[in-house]
Amino acid sequence: MRTVADAVKSAADAVEDAVEDVIESVIDWVSAKFGGIIGFVFAILGGLMIAIMKIIVRFFGDFLSIMKGLSRITAAIIRLDLPQVINSFGELAVSVIGTFVDLLRFFTGGFFVGSIVDQVNRIALKRFVENLISKSITDPDARRAARARLRMDHSDWGFPLSAQHRVFMLDTANTPLWKWHSEGFIDLYALAGVQSFRSFQVQHPRVWARWVSDQSNPQNESSWPVNRSMISSYIETQGVSHRFRFYALTPQALSDRLVLSEKKLKKMHVRVEWDWGPGFYMFKGSPPAHEIFKKEEFRFDLDGLDAYFANKGFRQGTPSEECDLIALCAFHYEKDSDGKEGYGQTAGRNLEEGAAFNASTCNQSGRTDSCCASISSLPGREGSGVIHRDVWPDYVYKYILPHEIGHYLGLCHFGHDGFQNVMFRPGSNSLLSLGLLSYYLQAEPEFTQDDAENCWRFIVGELQCCLSDKLQCKTAAAISSISTALTLEF
Image (cartoon, rainbow, N blue to C red; front, side, top):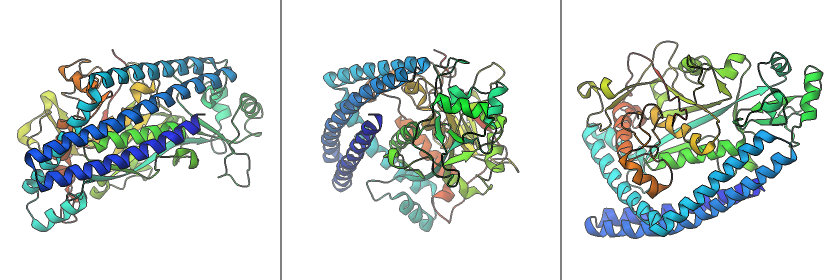
């Protein structure tokens, strides 16, 4: 049921994206050709057309989410997995509430107003970037190369961000998980998502357990579900009877995270291009993985993220590497001094925000968020990238990955009060703000128009080597890892 629903939803999303691109192409052509009032009128008409399409896709998605929730509950009951039953009921409740919110937005015009605002902001952002490039890149050849790289004369213009995603993976052929279980370091039953009498984990990450049934072809993972009997046999025989692989995130969950990141960054005209295309995950098998072997990697030390990227060969320390994104998904993190486990982090960026912000020393003039971001590097710790992990409830924590990519592209927490912001952080920002109206218009957290402009100030100011071979990227003198520590401190 879930696989079929996800395939149908992926198809609906693909159609929505294609139609939206066509409508926006027309809006851009009219705006460039006629400008002024005519361009504004077409932005309104296009926004209304996109809103109608979004309403259809949104309610269809709401229906599929409820059906998937019922399916998850049924499957958990059959497995006698009480924590997963509770988890699935929570997800179902969120889907039902989301449907009622969408109904409210439909009857009060929120869908239509939100789509019109999006189109007006999109036209304004393009003009902003055009002016920013003209003022910041004085060499004519470099400016032409940058415009070509960004496809500024096309409707799908934007910063192309090639992105690799790697899910942490444990292979019992190389790591004695039976021993970790016997030592009490992990609960292997809970990790595999089967009934456990050792722990009761409602907030269990969506780990993907796979059985390698054919030892002569270890790349061929069986589609047969891992069950409690298989795990028991593996533990009792001390790893002899079965071989398993455990991925920190299921393909379905990963696909949802990558699609969400693409959509959120697209509103800032950053075109994220993942190496594992997230659509139609059910036909792709296991996601690209990074095998880990140590307990210190299973409970990852966030303070060493930058060094980890460098030591594991993800980064070599060249400035051009900043043009590409590396994202990792971990099982768990080492708890901090307060006993809390972080949820996301960005390495390789210096962020000066709030009281530490100094406009006179910031390379990105005109920033409106009291934040200055720079690329940072030190020998042996040149790694930059982001890391996230799966946490329940997904409705809240699914925004961690786009949040971290926001940091990677120069955004801070400061000034993002209200949970309508992707860059909101509990504990650093106030939960409520006057900007909550945008949540009514969009029904979920978004990057703001100011975020988009400040992101582009960072791109044009710090990542110029990504725009033209004639330009150089800037680096700062010190390295910094910024932990978002997204905990539910409501």
